[in-house]
Amino acid sequence: MLLPDFYTQAQTLLEAALGQLIPLESPQPSLLTEGMRYALLGPGKRLRPLLVLATSYTVNGAPEQALQSALAIECIHAYSLVHDDLPAMDNDDLRRGRPTCHKQYNEGLAILIGDALLTLAFEQIAAYPSCVRLVAQAAGFQGMVQGQALDLAYTTRQEPALLPTIHHLKTTCLFQAAVDLGLATQSNISPEVRARFQTLIQAFGLCYQLQDDLEDAAKGEKTSFITTHGEAYTRTLLSENTQKIFSELALLPYNTSILEPLFRSILTRTDCPEGIA
Ligand code: GRG
Image 1 (tube, rainbow, N blue to C red):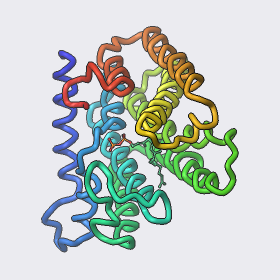
Image 2 (cartoon, rainbow, N blue to C red):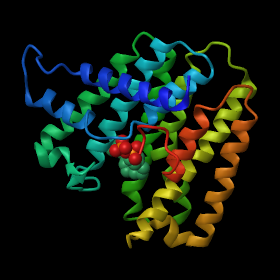
Image 3 (spheres, rainbow, N blue to C red):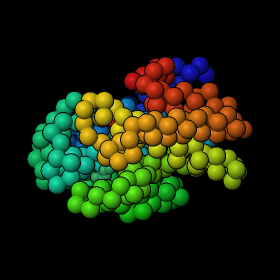
């Protein structure tokens, strides 16, 4: 399959499947289901589900399990953004160029929209118990929610040493879960391959966050990692870890012509696979 074809098809498949997750004409149409669709179907880049599908495709995994896992991880991501935007968290008014969920609806409903998306995620992978465990561990107190809790505490207890841990838990854990879900679609993955994927996704998570910080700094926004470690060090770390991603990919015993441009496009926002921008 040609590269643009893979991503065009994956995006089309994902949007169609996400659109069907929460029916418009449910027996009792409600603001809750409307809000869930608002949060889930907004113009996101779908990076995590694409990573699940691309990883699974690379290792020749089971496509149906990959799709269910991709939907689950996008539900988790959407819930995390709804809750992250709440007044008690980041208190943001805009997300993806539109009013945040609590601005569009109200705060109470936004909390429930997040809750419902979180539970919907687990419904998608209920047939795959190992995936349920994997997602629960990445998204819960050992992962993303713990990262958010540490981030909340950081506003009063500013310990720069905590920043890499916060970034890792808030951002990398979900990317790691995406790759692990992709690998879980193939029973025949060697420990060496698993370890290489782990190394490269850890490097990728760090790069993703550093890139985000550099973009914020360029816009004049204060970003804590650059404030504490300096821009030069941030760029060096970014460059070292970018190299690590591609050297690990090159050592995988698979054709990585689908995965490689996905990582490259996310990190550089250039040479994007069609459909991801
Ligand atoms: C509220 C439990 C809870 C967790 C929130 C994900 C998160 C944790 C907070 C979002 C703030 C954050 C860490 C931003 C940095 C990177 C990030 C996750 C950006 C948004 O992801 P994209 O760029 O968004 O994939 P789209 O809109 O494309 O889906």
